[in-house]
Amino acid sequence: MTSTSSTDLIPHIERGLADLRDLVALQSVSAQGRMLPETAAHVTRLLEAEGFTVRSYPGEVAPVLVAEAGEGSATLLIYNHYDVQPEDPLELWDSPPFELTERDGRLYGRGASDDKGELASRLAAVRAVRERHEGRLPLRVRWLIEGEEEVGSPSLERFIAEHADELRADGCWWEFGGISPEGRPVASLGLKGVMGVELRCRVAASDLHSSLGAVIDNPLYRLARAVASLRDETGRVTIPGFHDDVREPSDADRAAIARIPGDGQPVRDTYGVTRPLATGSAYHERANLMPVVNVNGWGGGYQGEGSKTVLPAHGFVKLDFRLVPDQDPARILEVLRAHLDAQGLEDIEIVELEAHQKPARADAGHPFVRACIEAAGEAHGAEPIVHPSSAASGPMHPFTYHLGVPCVALGIGNVGGRVHAPNENIVREHFEKGVAFGVALLERLARE
Ligand SMILES: [Zn+2]
Image 1: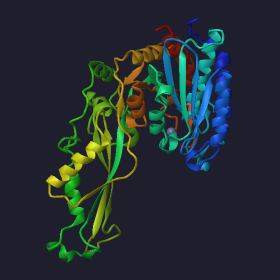
Image 2: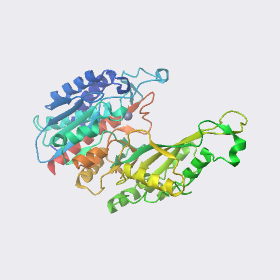
Image 3: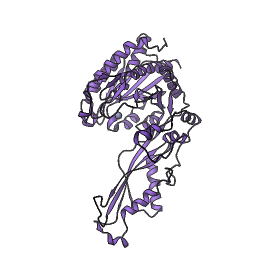
Image 4: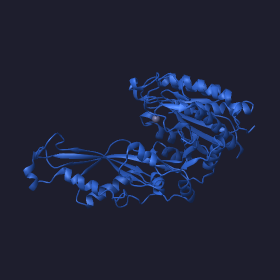
């Protein structure tokens, strides 16, 4: 009953790939509002065929689905999305984006990885577990599937807050995950927060002759002073109060980071990096745990050929902050304001650019996390690589905050998966391993 040997999974893998082909054919591009209700209806039929009760709720862009099936002492929440990124530029695809196409052990198509491949492999695992248990699931599975993830999940936080009772669980299986080039499953237990900010400075109603620089201040110089004061040469943020709410990592978190292989050399090679801030053991420590400020771009004044003796009237700098638990974007804006004021830069305006995402991280020692890691090791036959936090961001905070669940990202993505780009793909063998992992996880949670 609890074996995860792959031979009995073969029909479920084949059926899962057929599901994936049908899902990829549905052009559910949320940015363009294409085929979202149709795809939601198709996903609903797939879930109902596996014994799920499915409720559909209107979202700002696309229906939000909540499905539930099974009984037992354990409850697993699964989070996925059925929308995809636009397929263009079309001419860079080697096969039609909405036809799942196999070449050299890989399956190509928009959504093959993000996120329909994840969805289809998990559904295949549910089917396999049901078959082993005479048509019933030995644990409760709650499945939240939205259609707005690729446009920033505008309905998600409020939806989770309002439907917390329908979604409560022992833990959440996050929508994505990866497999390393060496075939090791890569788990992420958290995501950094992100906040985009623009600093704006204006000293006059219109541009002036630069001879007036002796008597009138320069907005780009004031912005340069502001930017230079935000961090030191090591990359550490120097805004007073910025680190006050940073949560100390646990011993389990530190142990997991120490076991992450490599020190970022592939990233430095891929991009021809000339000024790394951290190598060696500091690389993963920083990528997982360190909050940062980035300067994304700078505008104002003359940017054309040759020179123009102008004193610009105004300028701007675009920044993003990558935050870690338990930093709060609203509090970061306060300390940034106080920091600029303290330097006599009161006239620099701070504008938050778009909706921020708050950081979230589960403890590497949490029992649900341990169950996920053990199931991944069993299914892949390789020791999982555990990142306490991905360096990237996403809508994980509403889950940890409103539902109190740890979230674990484990899935079937690969480093050459070209997610969001032409020729998005998964490795077929990773799909098979993904099904085996799903079976191992459900069986393990049902037993514990
Ligand atoms: Zn995506």
